[in-house]
Image (cartoon, rainbow, N blue to C red; front, side, top):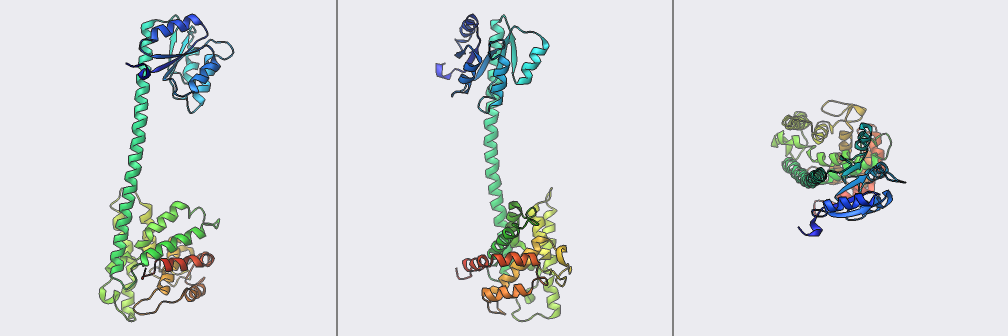
Length: 364
Protein backbone atom coordinates (compact mmCIF):
# COMPACT_ATOMS: atom_id res chain seq x y z
CA UNK A 1 0.00 0.00 0.00
CA UNK A 2 1.39 3.39 -0.94
CA UNK A 3 1.83 5.93 1.85
CA UNK A 4 -0.72 8.38 0.44
CA UNK A 5 -3.36 5.65 0.48
CA UNK A 6 -2.87 4.87 4.16
CA UNK A 7 -5.45 6.19 6.62
CA UNK A 8 -4.10 9.03 8.72
CA UNK A 9 -4.07 8.74 12.51
CA UNK A 10 -3.57 11.83 14.67
CA UNK A 11 -1.81 10.84 17.90
CA UNK A 12 -2.26 13.35 20.71
CA UNK A 13 -0.22 12.86 23.89
CA UNK A 14 2.04 15.11 25.98
CA UNK A 15 4.43 12.26 26.86
CA UNK A 16 7.17 11.62 24.23
CA UNK A 17 7.57 7.95 25.20
CA UNK A 18 3.87 7.33 24.62
CA UNK A 19 4.03 9.02 21.21
CA UNK A 20 7.05 6.94 20.22
CA UNK A 21 5.30 3.71 21.25
CA UNK A 22 2.07 4.55 19.45
CA UNK A 23 3.79 5.63 16.25
CA UNK A 24 5.91 2.49 16.19
CA UNK A 25 2.81 0.32 16.57
CA UNK A 26 0.83 2.18 13.92
CA UNK A 27 3.55 3.12 11.49
CA UNK A 28 3.47 -0.03 9.38
CA UNK A 29 -0.18 0.31 8.53
CA UNK A 30 -1.10 3.98 8.98
CA UNK A 31 0.23 7.43 8.31
CA UNK A 32 0.83 9.21 11.62
CA UNK A 33 0.49 12.84 12.63
CA UNK A 34 1.53 13.96 16.09
CA UNK A 35 0.45 16.67 18.54
CA UNK A 36 1.78 17.14 22.07
CA UNK A 37 -0.95 19.51 23.29
CA UNK A 38 -4.61 20.27 22.75
CA UNK A 39 -4.24 23.46 20.70
CA UNK A 40 -1.85 21.79 18.28
CA UNK A 41 -4.19 18.81 17.99
CA UNK A 42 -7.08 21.08 17.02
CA UNK A 43 -4.98 22.88 14.42
CA UNK A 44 -3.96 19.60 12.78
CA UNK A 45 -7.48 18.15 12.93
CA UNK A 46 -8.99 21.24 11.26
CA UNK A 47 -6.40 21.35 8.47
CA UNK A 48 -7.08 19.65 5.14
CA UNK A 49 -6.90 16.75 4.67
CA UNK A 50 -8.47 15.86 8.00
CA UNK A 51 -7.17 12.82 9.89
CA UNK A 52 -9.23 9.66 9.58
CA UNK A 53 -9.09 8.93 13.31
CA UNK A 54 -7.74 10.59 16.46
CA UNK A 55 -6.07 8.85 19.40
CA UNK A 56 -6.49 11.41 22.17
CA UNK A 57 -4.91 11.40 25.60
CA UNK A 58 -7.19 12.77 28.31
CA UNK A 59 -4.72 13.99 30.95
CA UNK A 60 -2.83 16.88 29.35
CA UNK A 61 -1.90 20.29 30.77
CA UNK A 62 -3.68 23.53 29.78
CA UNK A 63 -6.29 21.85 27.56
CA UNK A 64 -7.23 18.27 28.43
CA UNK A 65 -8.61 15.65 26.08
CA UNK A 66 -12.20 16.29 27.07
CA UNK A 67 -11.91 19.95 26.03
CA UNK A 68 -10.30 18.99 22.74
CA UNK A 69 -13.04 16.46 22.02
CA UNK A 70 -15.79 18.91 22.96
CA UNK A 71 -14.38 21.52 20.57
CA UNK A 72 -13.85 19.14 17.65
CA UNK A 73 -17.39 17.75 17.96
CA UNK A 74 -18.78 21.27 17.87
CA UNK A 75 -17.22 22.05 14.48
CA UNK A 76 -18.83 21.03 11.18
CA UNK A 77 -15.49 20.15 9.58
CA UNK A 78 -14.28 17.84 12.37
CA UNK A 79 -17.34 16.50 14.17
CA UNK A 80 -17.39 13.25 12.19
CA UNK A 81 -13.76 12.30 12.87
CA UNK A 82 -13.83 9.28 15.23
CA UNK A 83 -12.00 9.90 18.51
CA UNK A 84 -10.59 7.14 20.74
CA UNK A 85 -9.54 8.26 24.21
CA UNK A 86 -6.26 7.00 25.64
CA UNK A 87 -6.25 7.19 29.42
CA UNK A 88 -5.09 5.75 32.68
CA UNK A 89 -8.47 6.70 34.16
CA UNK A 90 -10.66 3.66 34.68
CA UNK A 91 -13.58 5.09 36.61
CA UNK A 92 -17.01 4.52 35.05
CA UNK A 93 -17.79 8.22 35.26
CA UNK A 94 -14.72 9.06 33.18
CA UNK A 95 -15.81 6.75 30.36
CA UNK A 96 -19.39 8.01 30.52
CA UNK A 97 -18.24 11.59 30.15
CA UNK A 98 -16.08 10.71 27.16
CA UNK A 99 -18.90 8.93 25.35
CA UNK A 100 -21.28 11.79 26.09
CA UNK A 101 -18.79 14.14 24.41
CA UNK A 102 -18.80 11.97 21.27
CA UNK A 103 -15.84 9.61 21.63
CA UNK A 104 -16.27 6.24 19.94
CA UNK A 105 -14.05 4.19 22.27
CA UNK A 106 -11.67 4.05 25.22
CA UNK A 107 -8.27 2.37 25.43
CA UNK A 108 -6.69 2.21 28.86
CA UNK A 109 -3.00 2.57 29.60
CA UNK A 110 -0.70 0.73 29.66
CA UNK A 111 -1.56 -0.03 26.04
CA UNK A 112 -1.87 -3.57 24.76
CA UNK A 113 -0.66 -3.49 21.10
CA UNK A 114 -3.13 -6.08 19.82
CA UNK A 115 -6.09 -4.27 21.41
CA UNK A 116 -4.92 -0.89 20.07
CA UNK A 117 -4.57 -2.16 16.50
CA UNK A 118 -7.87 -4.04 16.61
CA UNK A 119 -9.80 -1.05 17.96
CA UNK A 120 -8.23 1.35 15.44
CA UNK A 121 -8.98 -1.02 12.55
CA UNK A 122 -12.57 -1.54 13.69
CA UNK A 123 -13.37 2.16 13.97
CA UNK A 124 -11.72 3.01 10.67
CA UNK A 125 -13.83 0.32 9.01
CA UNK A 126 -16.97 1.67 10.67
CA UNK A 127 -16.11 5.20 9.59
CA UNK A 128 -15.50 4.06 6.04
CA UNK A 129 -18.92 2.37 6.08
CA UNK A 130 -20.56 5.56 7.42
CA UNK A 131 -18.88 7.64 4.74
CA UNK A 132 -20.00 5.18 2.08
CA UNK A 133 -23.59 5.27 3.33
CA UNK A 134 -23.53 9.06 3.44
CA UNK A 135 -22.31 9.15 -0.15
CA UNK A 136 -24.95 6.64 -1.23
CA UNK A 137 -27.65 8.63 0.55
CA UNK A 138 -26.55 11.77 -1.24
CA UNK A 139 -26.63 9.94 -4.57
CA UNK A 140 -30.09 8.57 -3.78
CA UNK A 141 -31.34 12.03 -2.79
CA UNK A 142 -30.16 13.41 -6.13
CA UNK A 143 -31.80 10.50 -7.95
CA UNK A 144 -35.06 11.02 -6.03
CA UNK A 145 -34.97 14.75 -6.80
CA UNK A 146 -34.38 14.04 -10.49
CA UNK A 147 -37.17 11.45 -10.56
CA UNK A 148 -39.50 13.81 -8.74
CA UNK A 149 -38.82 16.49 -11.35
CA UNK A 150 -39.47 13.99 -14.13
CA UNK A 151 -42.76 12.89 -12.56
CA UNK A 152 -43.80 16.52 -12.02
CA UNK A 153 -43.05 17.29 -15.67
CA UNK A 154 -45.01 14.21 -16.75
CA UNK A 155 -47.89 15.22 -14.48
CA UNK A 156 -47.91 18.72 -15.97
CA UNK A 157 -47.90 17.29 -19.48
CA UNK A 158 -50.85 15.00 -18.70
CA UNK A 159 -52.80 17.85 -17.09
CA UNK A 160 -52.18 20.08 -20.09
CA UNK A 161 -53.16 17.31 -22.51
CA UNK A 162 -56.39 16.64 -20.59
CA UNK A 163 -57.25 20.33 -20.48
CA UNK A 164 -56.42 20.75 -24.16
CA UNK A 165 -58.77 17.88 -24.99
CA UNK A 166 -61.59 19.72 -23.25
CA UNK A 167 -60.71 23.00 -24.94
CA UNK A 168 -60.51 21.32 -28.34
CA UNK A 169 -64.23 20.51 -28.14
CA UNK A 170 -65.12 24.07 -27.23
CA UNK A 171 -65.25 27.29 -29.18
CA UNK A 172 -62.75 28.85 -26.76
CA UNK A 173 -59.35 29.75 -28.15
CA UNK A 174 -56.50 27.28 -27.80
CA UNK A 175 -54.37 29.59 -25.69
CA UNK A 176 -57.11 30.04 -23.11
CA UNK A 177 -55.37 27.50 -20.88
CA UNK A 178 -52.04 29.32 -20.96
CA UNK A 179 -53.53 32.73 -20.40
CA UNK A 180 -55.70 31.72 -17.45
CA UNK A 181 -52.73 29.93 -15.87
CA UNK A 182 -50.67 33.11 -15.98
CA UNK A 183 -53.56 35.34 -14.96
CA UNK A 184 -54.27 33.34 -11.82
CA UNK A 185 -50.61 33.20 -10.84
CA UNK A 186 -50.19 36.96 -11.15
CA UNK A 187 -53.46 37.61 -9.34
CA UNK A 188 -52.57 35.25 -6.48
CA UNK A 189 -49.13 36.81 -6.10
CA UNK A 190 -50.68 40.25 -5.81
CA UNK A 191 -53.23 39.06 -3.24
CA UNK A 192 -50.48 37.38 -1.22
CA UNK A 193 -49.11 40.86 -0.47
CA UNK A 194 -52.21 41.40 1.67
CA UNK A 195 -51.54 40.08 5.19
CA UNK A 196 -55.01 38.50 5.26
CA UNK A 197 -54.08 36.17 2.41
CA UNK A 198 -50.31 35.79 2.86
CA UNK A 199 -50.48 32.43 4.65
CA UNK A 200 -53.05 30.88 2.34
CA UNK A 201 -51.34 32.12 -0.81
CA UNK A 202 -47.76 31.09 -0.14
CA UNK A 203 -45.42 30.24 -3.02
CA UNK A 204 -46.33 26.56 -2.91
CA UNK A 205 -50.04 27.34 -3.15
CA UNK A 206 -49.42 29.77 -6.01
CA UNK A 207 -47.56 27.02 -7.88
CA UNK A 208 -50.47 24.65 -7.23
CA UNK A 209 -52.93 27.21 -8.58
CA UNK A 210 -50.83 27.53 -11.73
CA UNK A 211 -50.77 23.75 -12.14
CA UNK A 212 -54.46 23.25 -11.35
CA UNK A 213 -55.89 26.08 -13.42
CA UNK A 214 -55.90 24.21 -16.77
CA UNK A 215 -58.46 21.75 -15.37
CA UNK A 216 -61.07 24.41 -14.63
CA UNK A 217 -63.19 23.43 -17.66
CA UNK A 218 -62.31 19.74 -17.84
CA UNK A 219 -66.00 18.95 -17.29
CA UNK A 220 -66.85 20.28 -20.75
CA UNK A 221 -65.92 16.87 -22.15
CA UNK A 222 -69.27 15.71 -20.76
CA UNK A 223 -71.34 18.39 -22.49
CA UNK A 224 -72.96 17.32 -25.82
CA UNK A 225 -71.49 18.92 -28.96
CA UNK A 226 -74.88 20.30 -30.01
CA UNK A 227 -74.75 22.51 -26.93
CA UNK A 228 -71.03 23.07 -26.54
CA UNK A 229 -70.52 24.07 -30.17
CA UNK A 230 -73.75 25.95 -30.72
CA UNK A 231 -72.86 29.33 -32.29
CA UNK A 232 -75.95 31.15 -31.08
CA UNK A 233 -77.57 31.81 -27.74
CA UNK A 234 -78.41 28.73 -25.67
CA UNK A 235 -81.96 27.97 -24.64
CA UNK A 236 -82.72 27.75 -20.93
CA UNK A 237 -82.67 23.98 -21.17
CA UNK A 238 -79.36 23.99 -23.03
CA UNK A 239 -77.82 26.42 -20.57
CA UNK A 240 -78.91 24.19 -17.70
CA UNK A 241 -77.02 21.33 -19.33
CA UNK A 242 -74.00 23.57 -20.03
CA UNK A 243 -73.83 24.51 -16.36
CA UNK A 244 -73.41 20.84 -15.49
CA UNK A 245 -69.83 20.98 -16.79
CA UNK A 246 -68.87 22.15 -13.30
CA UNK A 247 -70.33 18.96 -11.81
CA UNK A 248 -68.76 16.76 -14.49
CA UNK A 249 -65.38 18.36 -13.81
CA UNK A 250 -65.67 17.91 -10.06
CA UNK A 251 -66.70 14.26 -10.42
CA UNK A 252 -63.87 13.49 -12.85
CA UNK A 253 -61.29 14.90 -10.44
CA UNK A 254 -62.84 13.08 -7.47
CA UNK A 255 -62.55 9.84 -9.47
CA UNK A 256 -58.85 10.58 -9.99
CA UNK A 257 -58.40 11.33 -6.27
CA UNK A 258 -59.86 7.94 -5.33
CA UNK A 259 -57.01 6.24 -7.20
CA UNK A 260 -54.48 7.79 -4.80
CA UNK A 261 -53.53 6.47 -1.37
CA UNK A 262 -53.05 9.98 0.02
CA UNK A 263 -54.72 13.28 -0.91
CA UNK A 264 -52.96 15.29 -3.62
CA UNK A 265 -53.28 18.98 -2.84
CA UNK A 266 -53.28 20.13 -6.44
CA UNK A 267 -56.24 17.83 -7.21
CA UNK A 268 -58.15 19.27 -4.26
CA UNK A 269 -57.53 22.76 -5.59
CA UNK A 270 -58.36 21.69 -9.15
CA UNK A 271 -61.63 20.20 -7.91
CA UNK A 272 -62.57 23.42 -6.12
CA UNK A 273 -61.79 25.49 -9.21
CA UNK A 274 -63.62 23.18 -11.62
CA UNK A 275 -66.72 23.00 -9.43
CA UNK A 276 -66.98 26.58 -8.20
CA UNK A 277 -65.39 29.02 -10.67
CA UNK A 278 -68.85 30.06 -11.91
CA UNK A 279 -70.10 30.98 -8.44
CA UNK A 280 -70.64 34.70 -7.84
CA UNK A 281 -69.89 36.83 -4.80
CA UNK A 282 -73.58 37.77 -4.40
CA UNK A 283 -74.75 34.13 -4.51
CA UNK A 284 -76.34 34.22 -7.97
CA UNK A 285 -73.80 31.92 -9.65
CA UNK A 286 -73.82 28.16 -10.14
CA UNK A 287 -73.91 25.26 -9.40
CA UNK A 288 -74.51 25.86 -5.65
CA UNK A 289 -75.34 29.58 -5.46
CA UNK A 290 -72.55 30.09 -2.93
CA UNK A 291 -72.10 33.64 -1.65
CA UNK A 292 -69.04 35.50 -0.40
CA UNK A 293 -66.23 33.48 1.11
CA UNK A 294 -68.27 30.28 1.00
CA UNK A 295 -66.71 29.91 -2.46
CA UNK A 296 -63.09 28.70 -2.16
CA UNK A 297 -60.50 31.43 -2.77
CA UNK A 298 -59.01 29.45 -5.65
CA UNK A 299 -62.37 29.51 -7.46
CA UNK A 300 -62.90 33.22 -6.71
CA UNK A 301 -59.57 33.94 -8.34
CA UNK A 302 -60.37 31.80 -11.37
CA UNK A 303 -63.80 33.43 -11.74
CA UNK A 304 -62.20 36.77 -12.55
CA UNK A 305 -59.45 35.26 -14.74
CA UNK A 306 -61.94 33.22 -16.76
CA UNK A 307 -64.26 36.19 -17.34
CA UNK A 308 -61.41 38.52 -18.28
CA UNK A 309 -60.18 36.02 -20.86
CA UNK A 310 -63.67 35.48 -22.24
CA UNK A 311 -64.13 39.24 -22.60
CA UNK A 312 -60.80 39.91 -24.29
CA UNK A 313 -60.83 37.06 -26.81
CA UNK A 314 -62.91 36.56 -29.90
CA UNK A 315 -65.57 33.86 -29.84
CA UNK A 316 -67.92 32.68 -32.58
CA UNK A 317 -70.72 34.60 -30.89
CA UNK A 318 -68.81 37.83 -30.02
CA UNK A 319 -65.89 40.08 -30.90
CA UNK A 320 -63.01 40.60 -28.50
CA UNK A 321 -63.34 43.52 -26.12
CA UNK A 322 -60.31 45.76 -25.57
CA UNK A 323 -58.57 45.57 -22.20
CA UNK A 324 -60.14 48.83 -21.05
CA UNK A 325 -63.67 47.63 -21.73
CA UNK A 326 -63.04 44.28 -20.04
CA UNK A 327 -61.59 46.08 -17.02
CA UNK A 328 -64.65 48.32 -16.79
CA UNK A 329 -66.97 45.29 -16.83
CA UNK A 330 -64.95 43.61 -14.08
CA UNK A 331 -65.08 46.76 -11.94
CA UNK A 332 -68.85 46.88 -12.42
CA UNK A 333 -68.99 43.30 -11.14
CA UNK A 334 -67.12 44.13 -7.92
CA UNK A 335 -69.13 42.88 -4.95
CA UNK A 336 -71.65 41.28 -7.29
CA UNK A 337 -69.95 38.78 -9.57
CA UNK A 338 -66.48 39.09 -8.08
CA UNK A 339 -64.85 39.11 -4.65
CA UNK A 340 -64.04 42.79 -3.95
CA UNK A 341 -60.53 41.88 -2.71
CA UNK A 342 -59.84 39.97 -5.91
CA UNK A 343 -60.95 42.96 -7.97
CA UNK A 344 -58.68 45.24 -5.92
CA UNK A 345 -55.75 42.93 -6.62
CA UNK A 346 -56.65 42.89 -10.32
CA UNK A 347 -56.79 46.69 -10.36
CA UNK A 348 -53.22 46.85 -9.02
CA UNK A 349 -51.84 44.64 -11.83
CA UNK A 350 -54.02 45.43 -14.84
CA UNK A 351 -51.02 46.00 -17.11
CA UNK A 352 -49.77 42.46 -16.40
CA UNK A 353 -53.08 41.01 -17.55
CA UNK A 354 -52.89 43.06 -20.74
CA UNK A 355 -49.33 41.86 -21.32
CA UNK A 356 -50.27 38.20 -20.80
CA UNK A 357 -53.18 38.61 -23.22
CA UNK A 358 -50.72 39.98 -25.77
CA UNK A 359 -47.98 37.38 -25.13
CA UNK A 360 -50.38 34.46 -25.52
CA UNK A 361 -52.64 35.94 -28.19
CA UNK A 362 -53.96 33.41 -30.68
CA UNK A 363 -51.91 34.75 -33.59
CA UNK A 364 -48.57 34.31 -31.73
